[in-house]
Image (cartoon, rainbow, N blue to C red; front, top):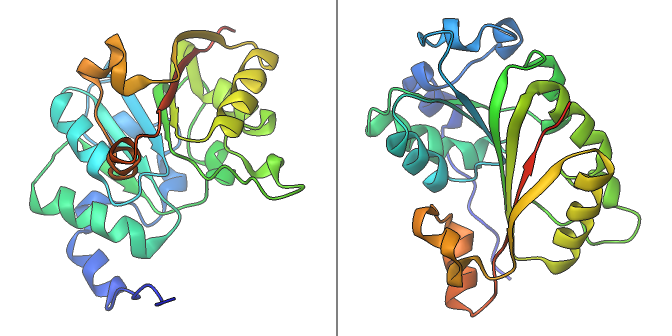
Length: 217
């Protein structure tokens, strides 16, 4: 099997796009709208695991009045997303090159309006469910960051992860709606923005699982 090529000159390329990401995002906690030049009442969307950025760039363009923060821990992957936002001059899209385990360090209580979990790692190997981004320890963090009535939009191709997530959402007091196991054939697909992975799965005839989990405090 051929190895994936490592991107070259990552620091230099990140530096050229430094207006799109934050080297020290700890300073932004509770002040994201102010720091990014948005009004206090604007909505803040957070995507965890943005990959190469197809979804976040399209969403930011679709919602120009929303402050969109996209997170990805792999610098060689997020570089593509950052360069895309930089080249297309998308003013409301910013990035975090950090691990989702540290989210509470970057976002204040009630600071986020909506979160997106798209095709997260299912961690299907034995004894790994606690690493899933919908495990209850993560959901407790999300509940603090989300406003009352804030939402998590989740999509996956993985049945096991989806069933697991539904149980965890309900355990943590989220209200579930817009649930489908065939998003591409549902009423919700009209407004759906597809990710790179999503289109590949659809082309393979795999049903896309999707749910909206609303925070109730």
